[in-house]
Length: 226
Image (cartoon, rainbow, N blue to C red):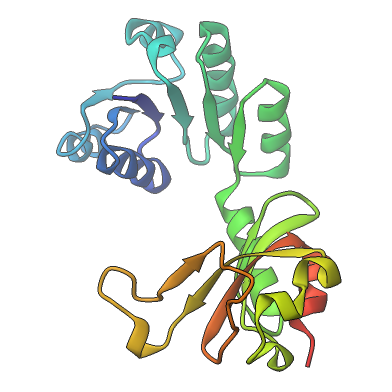
């Protein structure tokens, strides 16, 4: 069983902790607020009231023994930076930290944090990209250039199979999957009847949603076709 420590049990940290527990992980939570810790005790493996910016507390719980530490301190940027430094000095295997500003993100990267999450910024970019595109249903950035985007197929795609459309050659994109939201194909376990890695003879129909991987600019060109 994997072991994780979540430092800071605000909304963000609490939800990550719950998700880890639901996925059969052992989770330790640390927070300064007594009431927050009391609530967390209902589902966490261990919950500690204390100042996580204290090196003594981090050493006492054997922080380096955990598979990863999620640093989810809210608006306390100075505390977050200090804790990240202590975690690196302790030899923590993997550190995932929440950033609250661009400068905070840069500092965490400089300290060697393995993964920096900027929830507000990431969600804003995701929503902005999705609603700015004509036919986009959802958007997941992978790098500055590449993304996975769910799009409704252009009218010219309907009734044709993937071999005919030759999307990879024409648009430099890959179709990872096809969702069919038609009622007659929906089930309780799979309400959208998703086909992953569809074969070349799979026909695009009305009601399909394409899951497309490629350069964002290339996908945008494709989804604007008539």
